[in-house]
Length: 297
Image (cartoon, rainbow, N blue to C red; front, side, top):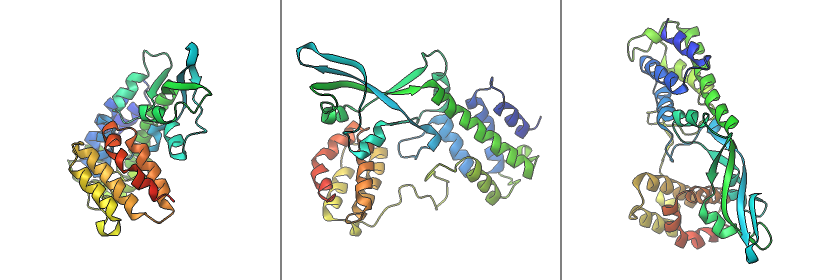
């Protein structure tokens, strides 16, 4: 059986682990010599880092529950989390669950469970807004409720994308899976077209191994206010790990360039949503928040 046919058969076989199927696809990717396909496979096999934009199929809309306490021993356990009083940028964060883990981890979630997973809310959000959700009660713990069926859907989506890609490749060259490494059995432009249509249609800024990648493109510092430049300089000299520094630096530069435009508010919300998931960055940024919010008006 050809490699393409093995991949197709595995994609329709419920007994085959997606991680095993992806490893076969990795062989195909090297024979096709396509960098976009290689990077997507690596991300699915090893997980997406925080600076990668997640595919939309790895972002779920979810509800949340929380435990509340009040005076005189009052409590409200496992209550629905109202979000109407949260800022818009937090509403989006608190109703979305993201999955950056390797696909094998997601597969493991689908066995030996009670039908649900959870992701905790940031303590910083509870500290700021936890006492404003129910009268005379404060939230001490909150979590997003994620159905296992939704996680199964993520895994199934990856299988379907693989199947569609393999079928399209076979239509053009049935022997492409048996080609020599990097022999380009199909023109790269055509492979990229098939990849973009069947796999990466909803992936933003996924690095493609070429100089056209838009990840971490730097803005000209002369375009942003001096306060932002000072913030960037302090960020570079901080003890935050390098990968996070690069991501936050990119977001702050974009924010600085957008000062005075309608885009500033949405970019500010995205920045705060991001840093609220990273305690070290949030702690660093707190002294600068008054400066950042001053540009919202």
